[in-house]
Length: 264
Image (cartoon, rainbow, N blue to C red; front, top):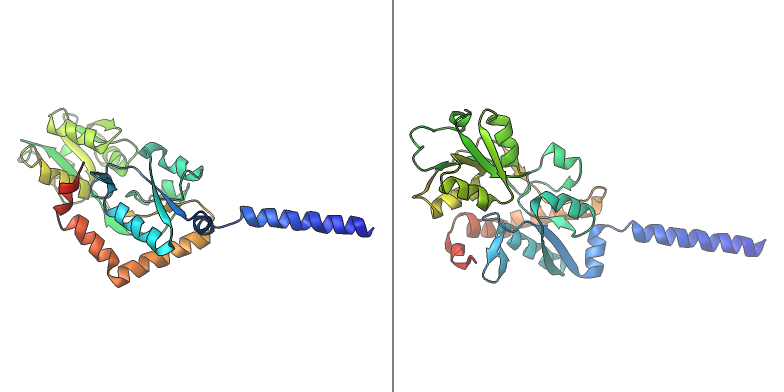
């Protein structure tokens, strides 16, 4: 009887140990691994884009500071946008830091930390249409062709607000913008920061209707059910916004063009 009780106790202890191991927070796994794995789709100015010495951008700098605060190394995992949530859910990385808008649909699949920046959709306009089109509403006609990136809030906004126009979707924002530059699309619906920078680089080929017509908070995405990691992220964000770190990074990427010299 004693042997049976001892065996049962050992099996119970083994089960509890196994459960505890499986129940670790992502933050615990990061610290054990000594590596923070960040998923992003490199190509979204100025959040993450290819530089001469590797990926750079607003999100990249925030990720570097985050890894530094954890005392671990940083691994950036470049992932196509349409597969970035499935990749997070299958543990290809620990967190999405890629200019992702918090939407109810995405929030059904993953959790988001508190928004770290708010943006909106704007219009990149084909050269020569400035007098004809002064608002996104003017584009809601069948004679216009709209470009955007597949699976983004630009895609969703175009379908919602410009349903009468023709919509062409592309794998990258650069391909969509090129359609406008080359005259194969009349306008591009996409995130205002990207459009603003693209217009500044190609001002003789496009115009920018810079007033956003949507409200879009961006957040860091993590797997569901991890209160410890979510708590850490929200407190970390509050800390860097309070101590000036966030403002310094923001000014570097949104109030200066010096970084453009390091583009690949």
